[in-house]
Length: 73
Image 1: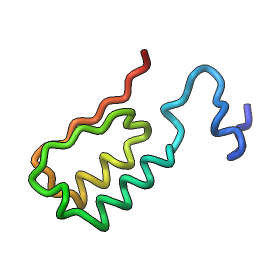
Image 2 (image 1 turned 90 degrees about the horizontal axis):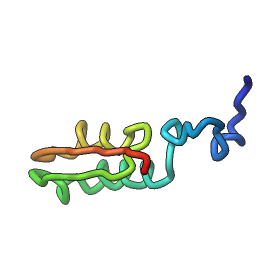
Image 3 (image 1 turned 180 degrees about the vertical axis):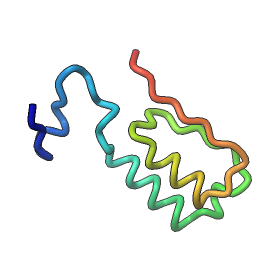
C-alpha cells in the first residue's frame, strides 16, 4: 500500500499515532523560543502523537519532569 502526504489525515486501521499534529509543532516551537516558562516545571502532554513536543521539552525545556500520554478511548 502506498501512502501519500495528502492521505495523512485518513490513515486506515486507526494509525492516528503516526500523524504529526499541528499542536505538536506549535508546542515544540513554543518550548524552544520560550523555554524559561517550562524550566523546572512538571509537564504533562496529552495526545503525545509521534512525540515531537516531548522531544522538544526534553532537549530544550529544562523541565523537572515530563509525562506524555497518548491513549485511545
